[in-house]
Length: 219
Image (cartoon, rainbow, N blue to C red; front, side):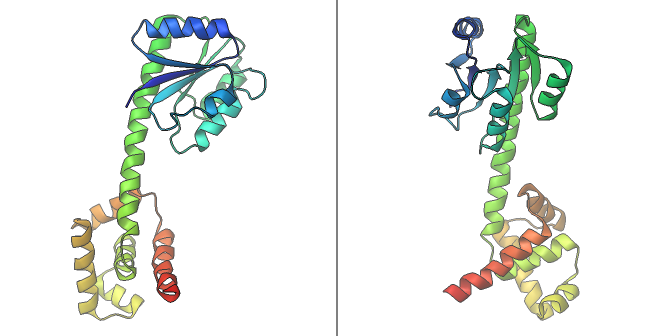
């Protein structure tokens, strides 16, 4: 999968200059004359980063930053603007920008920002993939397995789960064994880490277990 630097600016001469500048350093570059043009691009899921102006006709750089943040695969944003001040740069960085540069930026500083943004994108993609895998594993569990997982995350002993769910000790042991074998995870710490990786809370697990009853009722 190709890695692309997406450059958004309403100044066509700046786009051409930046494409040549970055292309000379081996980057794949895509240019867009507006935020709208970038948002309707075809390669929505490809890795890379965004270099964008701040003040543009129509949607500005902050609108773009927010739109990217809401997307399934948000790319890191580097602002490269001709008009910036300290409050503006603080806002951009607070909202997650990788860097805030002026159009007079020297090439080494620009390349450093791009490399940091690319590394961040790679790291965050791995984290999202890990979270998605963990969530799919949790969502594959049955009601009883989810209840056992809730108990593990809460730090409950088998006897506590027996009382909580109205099950015999033997049944709790059976479902705990089933849970660990299904997930191929055999320690409480690693089970709790799986839930954390999935971005789920105990309440989420409990709601998911309850939904299994609803699915059964509909069936």
